[in-house]
Image (cartoon, rainbow over all chains, first blue to last red; front, top):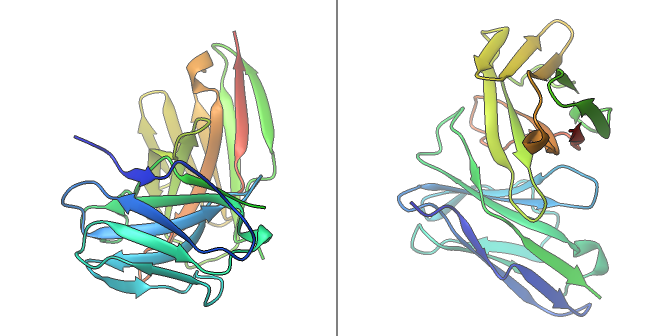
Length: 115
Length: 113
């Protein structure tokens, strides 16, 4: 079956603009995660959804970042007033039930460049 | 403060030999550890995991060792193959309410033919 997909694969924007990044999880997976990977670093957790609700948003860096998952499937990560420091690869992952020690399957990421 | 550390940014190994990738952690609440492998322009792919109740887990050419007292884990790949060349990330999680993975900064493994 299809894996996690993310669109767009690349996004270039100007400082101060608004961007939306989309994630399609594996079909039937109830848990969805967003991570951010800066150059030379490992992925850093942003937010975790269980179904439609954000179960843990402790990794969101500030209130410019927001994510939704209105129907419990596709999720959108929204970044307002983008800054150059937001440039990174944004990774989405999903897992079947969101249980402890469950494997998280990652998408290919969206590479965001803020000029 | 990095809770998961991979101190070797790169490692080169001859094909057929053993590759050993190391990882240290500081958070004693971590009880589940994973290794992910990442090729360029792709997302991380799950490789192998180990629970803190074990000290070794093996899957084919890949073995992960956990030393809880030293807060250290390692991934052994035997024999190494050129297709194993990738960035390897160590990750850890707690089995409480948190589901987030905490990653190290990765080690670039190059297997030379």
